[in-house]
Length: 452
Image 1 (cartoon, rainbow, N blue to C red):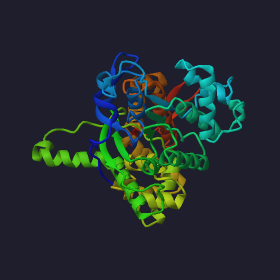
Image 2: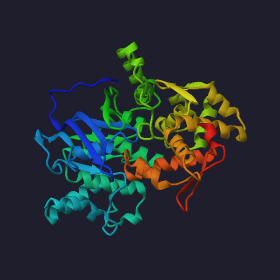
Image 3: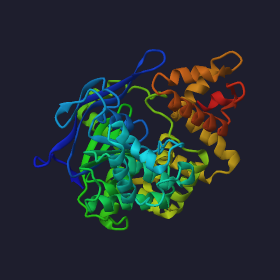
Image 4: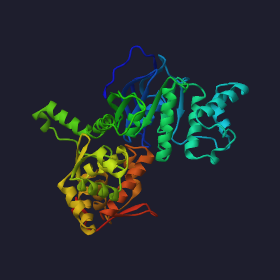
């Protein structure tokens, strides 16, 4: 894998220049999602947008498709600035987005009907697309009669039927089971390599590292909060690609290292550049907005640490994923949680358990709870904020609305809820506070302040 450079022989279909996108929170504050994005999608290539939750991947995809306008910067299609939905882009969504009262054929014809294509031509093109995607014989079936994989095939057929310049896909396989997703990915590659798919380029949003390496000619790795292009990498592997080869595994390790090593490298680079002067400037404390909680359960975290300890205390993420029959990116939230809580450290694509992690893993349930509580209260900003707020309040009770309002200053409503739900689980496990779901109220547990 090497750093990608533009190919002057290829025509550019979509280009972004300095694209920034900011949303407004309910209280009127600015929530930056994308920051100064420069990128291009050329004919004859598959490009993957890869990043963790909060990196703005889907928002960038919609900006490039002309579905939402950037706050600043420009998006161009074939050199012309976009002011509406791009005429040369078709999209496939994670949620299938089929109309349940229409048949397969009618759903596929919808996009042609919207473009004013006549009935006879619509039917011919729809049947051709349905056959291409492997659904011949299901033209009269309704979505409820189809499996998830078949419904996603309808989504592909509906996108391909308009013969777009660019096919945009937003996590198209994440709602499918592993085998169905693998089958669809392989068929998509087959159509692309056989030049059967009537598209000139593909842009796919994914959080799945292996999926990006399997499919893409170029990978754009996005950092989070707000989304920026951290790295642009070229994949020099012939298709079809074999996950078991050393070259493939090395590429996965490289991408994983970029995703997980970002903050550490940036801090080291900043310290080296600033020298002794940097030490005189106090580092900004982590907050619930700047350091969100990973979506990881305590049981899953403990399981990861136990596996790591059984493998000698230090191992590559790819090797751990193989041991568990998971994909590498399935481990990312658990790894992030272990690092946040001080139970593990990462270096590139390797993870090592710390002494605190060894102590937590070796402890019985009664001992592990206070160990977890101490680390969560001191190192997880949202958990710490809840404990501090409850400790400072008469009666040691607070409604969840306070924390949701504060979280919405940096997250949309759904993510704010997810963050608070994670904090509820972590705090309950550590017996730092209780939560009454009926009243939406937090109550501080006796002695919780001692964990701070």
